[in-house]
Image (tube, rainbow over all chains, first blue to last red; front, top):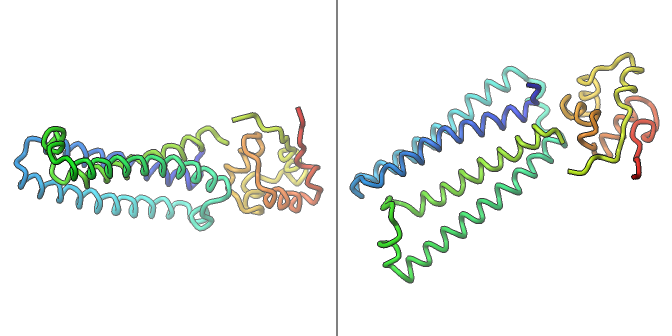
Length: 156
Length: 71
């Protein structure tokens, strides 16, 4: 498959984000039955692990990619790369905004109607608001990479 | 996406420029080889800046390389 440096870079980001944060969110959902205090610590550790691992994997894989292609790495994004990134950013930003608005709606609803939290927080996951924001962010990132890569694969 | 109405003769120009490679042209106009490939196939229309740089590389007028075909 004939791919530019930037396309390979986006594949690395997409796959690493899906794997690392997929594992993270799977474990967060699995915390549903765990006692709250214990679950809080586990959730915090999972979040730190996922972020640190994500940064490390990105640095290592991108360094390896750049090492195998110095010239392309130095050149950076050309106008076509920037156009595709712009299209990806548009979709990613929209998803992020929707996620933030939903989370804000939840916070305000709970503030005015505390019963809502007891009845509808069916997962009983500690730090649920933080996880919702994190989920919105990761989903927007995945969408951003996916749309950019879709443009690369279509060619225009 | 609508089919591009801009056609180009880059492949031909490269051939007559000592069979210049896509990579060589890409290096000279400051884009990736994949972008040159996409332009040649008519899948991507370059910016005016890149188009003018190509004309400079091939030492010809812009409309010798790119033509707009009205439907």
